[in-house]
Amino acid sequence: MAASGGGETHVAVLLIELGAILFGLGVLGRFARRFNIPVIPLYLLAGLCFGQGGVLSLSASHDFVQVAADIGVILLLVMLGLEYSADELRSSLRAQAPIGVLDGLLNALPGAALALIAGWGATAAVALAGITWVSSSGVIAKTLGDTGRLGNRETPAILGVLVIEDLAMALYLPLLTALLAGGGAGKIVLTVSIAVAAVTVVLVVATRFGRHVTTLVSARDNESLLLGVLGLTLLVAGLAEELKVSAAVGAFLVGIAVSGTVAETAVEVLSPLRDVFAAVFFVFFGLSTSPGQLLPVLPLALALAVVTSGTKMTTGFVAAKRAGVKRRGRWRAAVTLIPHGEFSVVVAALAVAAGAQAKLGPTTACYVLITILIGALVHKWPDRLRSEQSTPR
Amino acid sequence: MSVDITSRVLPGIGVCQEVALHDGRRIGIVTRRSGLRDLVLYDEEGDGAAENVALTDDEANAVAEILGAPQLTFRLSVLQRQADGLIVEQLPIPADSPFTRRPLGDTQARTRTGASIVAVLRQGAAVPSPTPDFVLHAGDLVVTVGTQAAVDQVAHILDGSAGSADTGG
Image (tube, rainbow over all chains, first blue to last red; front, side, top):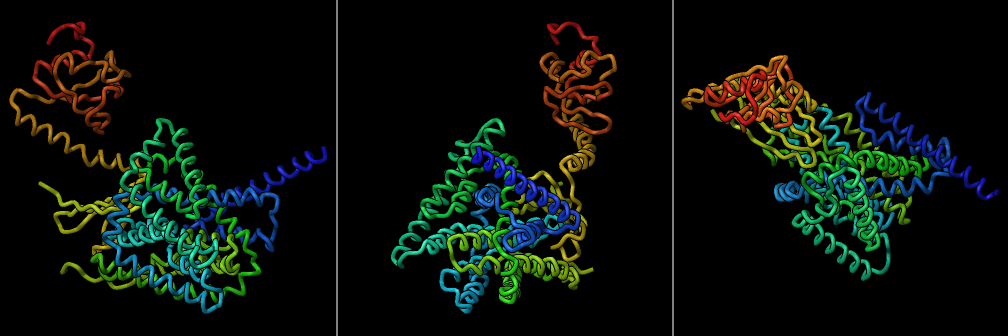
């Protein structure tokens, strides 16, 4: 009796904590919408306030929230894959490949360099490189939509850079997972080669034979479709995790494989789930970071943010110039790529969970918040530039 | 007169189509996968939006109908001039018609007369190519194309004065 009584209390506290978290996130979301700011930094801050060492400690729901956070990453990535079609991926690759390489070199190196200088070791360097490399598709797409810049001539160039970064992550994440798993150099090289080969093969198959995967999950009613896509995603993500390819990549590949109207409907039915679980993921990341750890890494994060803002602006400027856009558009593209978000947090969560340099967590939290802040501050500046007149008046 | 339209894919978001106007300006229409539409008026530099109007699905359809309605009537009158013996008429659905609140398919207009119903005008808005399950209301104007005899027969069917279904036409 005592055991079951304790069990009931445990469930009760878990429900209360979970409910409080989710309700709080809802309030934050309304706040963010009202003031037109992206919601991800607010989720992170909320997690920071309430985690270990924070204002309140939420312990009963910890395990559940952790699993929910893992599902959040999986849903984030399957949605990303679903929203891209195979044609978009191919044409973006073809058009923007050189920019993608430039983006990678310019933005990954500062992270790696800083980690090595700070003496965090090679694995942490690879992790930090990934954290500074990828801009936030979510924050940027939302900003473009909210500021009415979707029709701008520089927007396809911006989105193309994001597409290539997302594709690059499909190869980077298995590499990182293999490194984090440790072992001798030989073992690592083997694991990485297998993983990269597997991902490339699946990527090609997914873009060419996606129809078959699509028929596998396609259904007349939304309920069956939802269960099918969700089930397949979790299944493949789990298998990918077993094969050390990383669950996130497995989910991304499922998203790419499902195409057409099925993909559109899948996006519709999965969106609410993604919203809930992804929000939990960001809060959980904040929860596992103690606010006390933030101050020591703040100078580091600030330096990184300033340097990579510069490198991101270079990438954006060059990408827009290459697309034939004029001066104001080039600067608009430059400042739009500054914010970092989901992927940086995903990489950091992966690294910290595997036991790599613990400072990566607080550094990433600060870094993401600072870059989003910088992005918000400068995004209207290009409008003040004098325009290049295209037609004689 | 053909209008120059360029399309740009916005990966993960949708499509942007730019229309070149006769006075050199350009208008953009962004169709988002979520169904929202953005109407874009470009600034003098030509790359950025001076003005961006976000439209919901319903708002976009309403604007499209208002913009498209004159086109429909114009095209039909051109058709009338081009095909001898073919007339276009807007037949009203009277209040006492047996087909108010019934689907268009119930009239069997095409089967019985050979005339085609190409649009229904309701309170000034045009519904082009209505499907057989489009429900008719009193006061609708049914835009019918066919020979004079066929169109007259459709008028009789709609106001309930036609004979039984097996009367040939």
